[in-house]
Length: 312
Picture (spheres, rainbow, N blue to C red):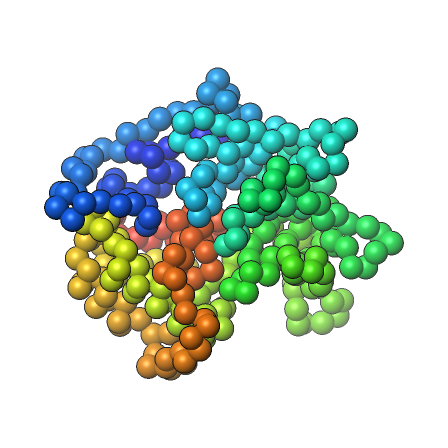
């Protein structure tokens, strides 16, 4: 756990020593790119600044740029200037289920999912300041498998997947609230090897081919129509536990599009989508922005160690 919460030049720890402007940033065509800092500037934020606890479990960023922090004493949101904190209130059923928040996840619709030792809580900032709770009920087979929630993620369809201690994997449809379960089967070599699931992650290859194509199309559209002169981008692939840098940070659109053109997607790299209703806006590369700018698992963090020395 982090003793303190740290940011580097406005980005989270592990950001490269370059200025990467958010995708929705705007810049005048004739405005030169800002000078890059030779050394990142670190600002330490502590309880004195409004952080609810110095015991920080999880840090994520949502699509609006807010940073959400799961701590031992509540959920915090940082907007770059100040913190807002949500804590459990025994007299308010709409408050967060527990002050101990070891996992936090932001889905593509902006909802914030918090897991802990009292089930799963969901906050939809666009619908008010109330949490919806999902808990285990021994008398209801359609309830959450376990109240010990350790991992939350979503797939390309927006379905929420939950991993917990002793509960296996749950599949939650946010629209209907229905929950399906995946458990280890005694005597079977198929399915889960354990019902203790501490991390969940979807990679691009796990997505249906049409979704892979939309993800690639979204990346290309961003470079062609939204990338500004102040933006720098890098392209990496993750395979067999290692990260390969295909293109270092650059503002060269032609070079970036050329590299994207070499990536094989699905079974047929020349396949095209004819479903106009599935067109992507370019706002997100794949499942959601958070999957690409926050590293959720130790597996991903360890993969960064394979990047050539001096890259970050």
